[in-house]
Image 1 (spheres, rainbow, N blue to C red):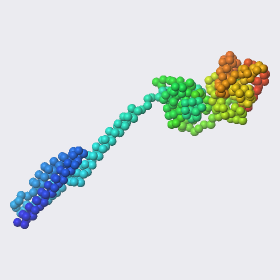
Image 2: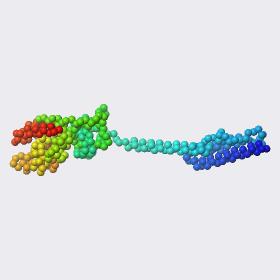
Image 3: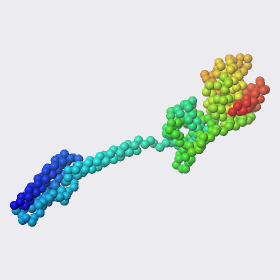
Image 4: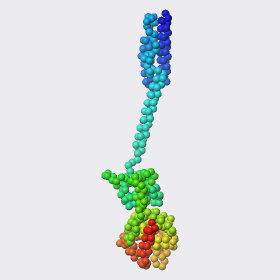
Length: 365
């Protein structure tokens, strides 16, 4: 009787444990149904297979004393049916859903990024010997780089004023670059570091060093000769040095002097020398009152009245370039002495004076 009582006792304990576990699983199932549908399957297994197995394992009441009493075992309660294991299963399911959601969001962002990708840049080739790249789209903006003739530029857009915005930053003026078709092999496009820009005209400056090579020292300007239509090799910095100590300094004339050299081929040393001679280094009455630095149309007894007047000194330099190109170089007057015969026939020393100023300025650099 004692053995039978113990057997019944253990059977009742096992049945109670099974019922409690089943109730717990059902509770978890109701709370996590949306997040973990697999829990429902676990509950069904517990409510059928596991419980049936446990009940089957119970000895019949009144069995012989040789029967073994039922003891709950791991085989009767699968690991995933335990409360702790159910919690782990729930976290795995929720984690997988979160990962899927994150992947979908990443895919959407990648798709948006692909749509936002800028259109391919146009390709231009530099036609000037040297061309300044400026921070902004105007002539006096800060120079941040220099490109040379034949360089290939990737251009994002062209402004209404004719400036080309370069890929990577910076502007160059479209008058000194031509658009090309890159269907065939071409030299690699010139790239600029973020934040850059270009000029309204080209300047004679040494090419900017490539990123892989150390900065190179700008080459010395070429010694001027009697020929007017030659390249000087001067930079804006060189001309600033030449103007130091004169009344021509600090007017921003460096840019326009180099512009007419690039546009018309008029050597910058020659332009500066004529300017210095005719304006008394910027101190003459015409230079101060009419911004006339070259004595343009100043002849006869009333030279100050007949001489051209300009709003700015820059306008005067541009006019000088146009006149020399059209009325002198264009008609075969290509040397200093030939120009002197027509430009200032009243002064036989004009050729020597201009040539001396050119050589003196060259020695300053």
